[in-house]
Length: 330
Ligand SMILES: Nc1ncnc2c1ncn2[C@@H]1O[C@H](COP(=O)(O)OP(=O)(O)OP(=O)(O)O)[C@@H](O)[C@H]1O
Ligand code: SF4
Ligand SMILES: [Mg+2]
Image 1 (cartoon, rainbow, N blue to C red):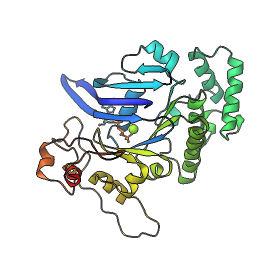
Image 2 (cartoon, rainbow, N blue to C red):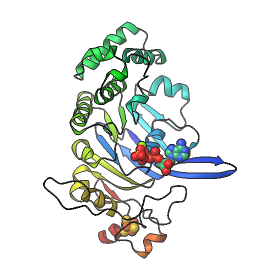
Image 3 (cartoon, rainbow, N blue to C red):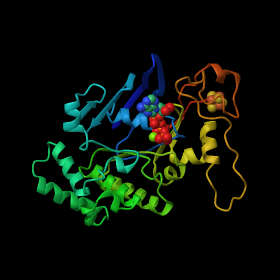
Image 4 (spheres, protein in one colour):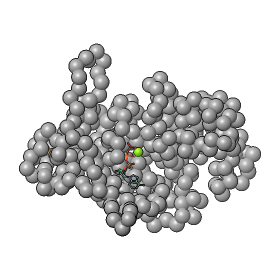
């Protein structure tokens, strides 16, 4: 059974400035499942809706963001949660940290710059009613940090005393101290150099292997997905373009946008310049008709300008939203 089932999710930002209302269709008709014990990658260029999607599935839905339609259901063993209808109290008490942990984009947003790391851990204890014995919990936190290969002294530092990579690893340690069923990490390696990135990714893999939980890893960096993810979802302009096991995404991508992403990856020894994609990502306040990729697609057909391609299974575990692929598979 899936750990999470998302069906036809539409989540929009609705703003009103000087009496002019604007709707940004950041997540539009998105359906996917997360399985227990997998690392699931979400990729796509800036502003395609990655962060919005994980905000919604983790229950962080605040105006101007609104869920227009769809469903989000979790199955945590014997505990089922409908995240769109759960009370804030139950979410805080039973779901956050214990079942779902969210490492937000930019680790500094989790760590308070004027508090020692250990104090941030204590803040979690204070807001987490399950923990009665603070001293015991702090021992547990030190053990957890140690188990993940970090020196326990980091807990007595201020965030600015740590390198970016160390801060990110501490943020991940904080998020996983209760061994949640689902860990969501938003761009955990962005802005880190390659060697430091490797350490952070290895830590995520180690945590997953240690607890057999599910990791939802969001990054625009396809090389990271190649190294870590079991399956990958490619988003384009608020919609799923393709979803497949990592090997198929990299060895046999079917959607023209995925093919572009794979072709753009640097290869060892290659010197020629990579061809870019024409145009810019669409404005989600006024998205293009039909396939949202049609203005940039090198293989565009007439039908693409008017009809939205459905996300259809092409092979087992491989779904693609493209008129071309549908035609080729007939
Ligand atoms: N608070 C907000 N109000 C209005 N629009 C927003 C808000 N936050 C995000 N958006 C818009 O929603 C769309 C999706 O943004 P989102 O942050 O989810 O993208 P992303 O894929 O995470 O991008 P990045 O890779 O840059 O982090 C964008 O068009 C963005 O401008
Ligand atoms: S549906 Fe058409 S425009 Fe969209 S990706 Fe496929 S071929 Fe290109
Ligand atoms: Mg983002």
